[in-house]
Length: 145
Image (cartoon, rainbow, N blue to C red; front, top):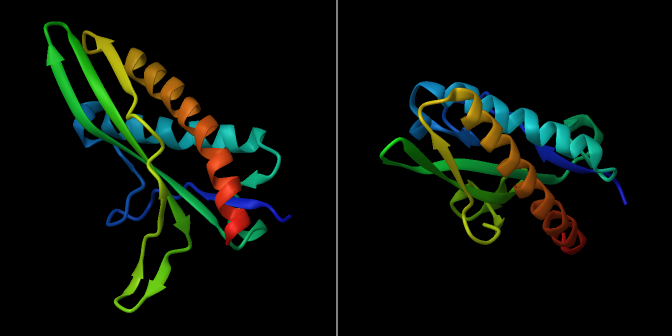
């Protein structure tokens, strides 16, 4: 079986795959941490790659901070992951996303105070866990394609 591509290109501002606007001033750093963590995790998984030239089909693992709730000195961030087939599928109304899975429950990150470092550490741990759960789903779906 050929390598399975995992798209990590977040440069298209109209179609971002890492969205952390709810992280306020830390949004850009959080999005970069999501991307870097996925690239590192995929590099460790033998049958996956982030090199577009090495594989023709694959997936995009979209991560969005959908909620940031403050309670006292603690902020809880909720991350919503989605696995989408890559490249975009074609239908009667043009190209669109074919979603594979949203995994299960949206993970949360609790940060006391406004610490950028604690937020980034939490983002890294949650993203690693999401990738760990997503790769087997991608592998199973790829067998059907």
